[in-house]
Length: 353
Image (cartoon, rainbow, N blue to C red; front, side, top):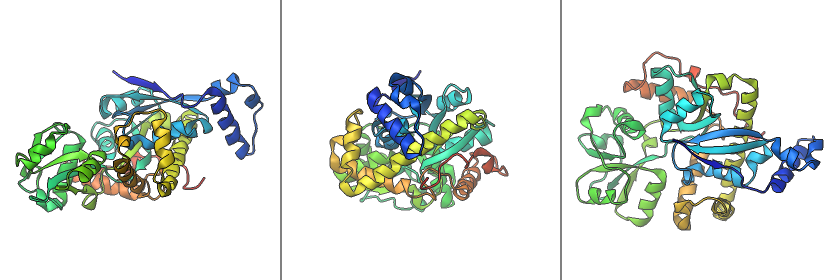
């Protein structure tokens, strides 16, 4: 089951003004810009599938592209649909019922390489992983080798978090069965399991890691990006849609709007993200924004991730190949395949179009 949020971030008149302004900048003015409703209805409707609740700073690019009008300026009317994880998102885009979704590079490679799904990654906005492992200063885990023999709490059985743990362990020559794991969920009380000695570490999102660092002085956060390349978040669609000229155009404009949004957020860093937070708060209820200090720290981490790639929303074939090598090394994807068959680098815009 999916829930839908229609992106009506600005009144139709405001959306029309932004469309006309964008067309003027490009040197073209359509007669329809004076036609009110007709021009607004001319926007292309596309559907984006978010595999987590939208009200997270992880989706700041989407929320800013909506509230700042970047989608509208690119001629898009975007609908968000929340799904229960990456599997239904992949199935929906493969069926052609949605244009695009954002999932992890690991899930993409497993779906395309192991299950032979006709899935292709066309862009990348989070260039470094956002999963973190928390321990305490009393029993610190600061490098991959420290996980040998430890009991690690995971949000659920299997899934990306557990695979990421396997990748981290594998980078230090540790076999998966040498790291014990226990499902602990995501509740705030999990930290008590850590301080009580019932687990040695547990896995959290970047947002939660920032919150713990700000509120629990004894928390120690390990960043898997220090030892592995996997963990980026990519925009994926079906090969059929990626090869359709009309869908290609929509995908290019979607990725361009996301690039506009990430560059806006990065520029707003100098102002403490004041406008970014104001825009998101104007429409969305994001818990992290209730504490500006925590929100600023989280946005700093996301901006660093936006800027960690070769281009704002482009996929690096070199990093993609390195990620495949890691994923196949631990048996999550068959070895000897061509990972470039699962990406299309032609649709992401240049750094400064």
